[in-house]
Length: 115
Image 1 (spheres, rainbow, N blue to C red):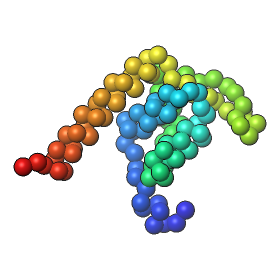
Image 2 (cartoon, rainbow, N blue to C red):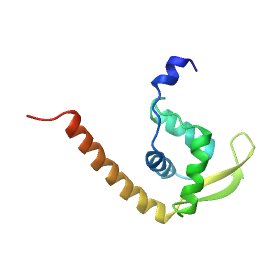
Image 3 (cartoon, rainbow, N blue to C red):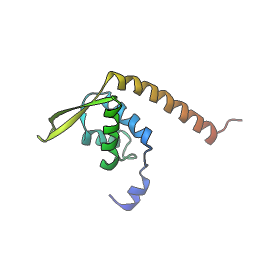
Image 4 (tube, rainbow, N blue to C red):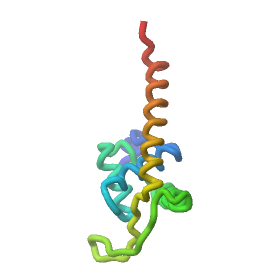
């Protein structure tokens, strides 16, 4: 990746990364590398999740019991942990999405005031 492309990428806040991981796992169990790639793909390459951010976030979400991890085999026949959203994680996803929507609306009101 060129230096220009690196500068065009957006860094994620910790809570935002948690929300994106939870949303990605809503579709079903996925291994860590695939979570990062899904976030990158679905953001049209604007968001990039580095391993140094992803795995601590996954461990944090496991500790909160919002996700669980099970051993499995990846598509390239390697051992991998597959992460899965728990019922508690589904509830948290709903809550975090509402909080994100409220925050985004507040920021939009400041950036684009009406009247």
